[in-house]
Length: 71
Image 1 (tube, one colour):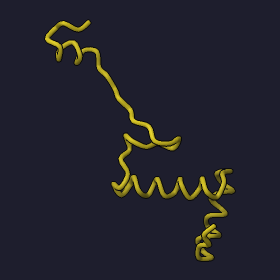
Image 2 (cartoon, helix red, strand yellow):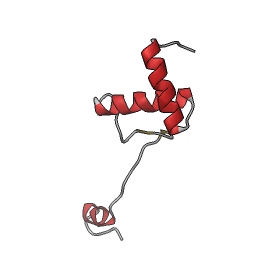
Image 3 (cartoon, one colour):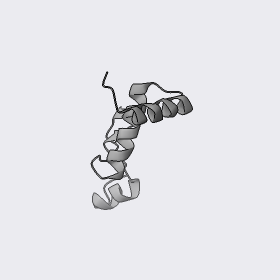
């Protein structure tokens, strides 16, 4: 376990108590939020539950793209 400066450790303890999560989960949550907010993490590829790629299909688009053969 990495020890952080005292002020950060105390803030992290308060965060874990408020959220009722483990230290590791708190660090992951804080880091993920910061990385996403600063555009280092692509929101579509990762979520809080792990790496997930999301694909959305629009039936109307698929019909148009297939030249009307879809259906």
